[in-house]
Image 1 (cartoon, rainbow, N blue to C red):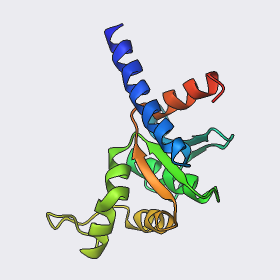
Image 2 (spheres, one colour):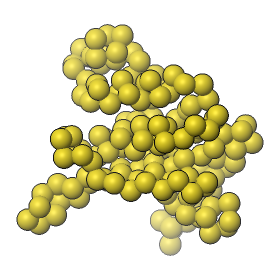
Image 3 (cartoon, helix red, strand yellow):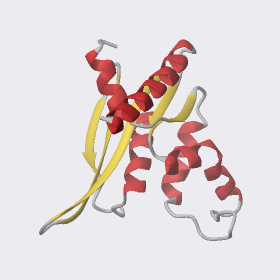
Length: 160
């Protein structure tokens, strides 16, 4: 019950952030990626994209992609941004990898020839290029939000 209360408090904090974004004219889109090892199959990686206006995408990563959670998170964000022409979009993600890259790191990596601050080669550069291109469109932001799908679900139950 203490754990549940902490989760509900985290959801409340995220909902407050989302309400602020809405008041600024942003449309919230929630993204998430996941991976699971299935007996006899191996790693299965997928992603989900959900929004208040009814957008719903659930898919597995293409088989020609490396199968990692980080790639699924990137894919979800790119798909969400590319699937709408709304003027102001706030991607709500619980991925610190995507949020950190989208809010500055990816552009710095690109300037350094796709190397991080320690000089190591950065993974997933083609996906980062796609994400940067989407974020260069006006009115596109990425917001870190813990428990994004729980927030979306509670909003749906409240009619919001």
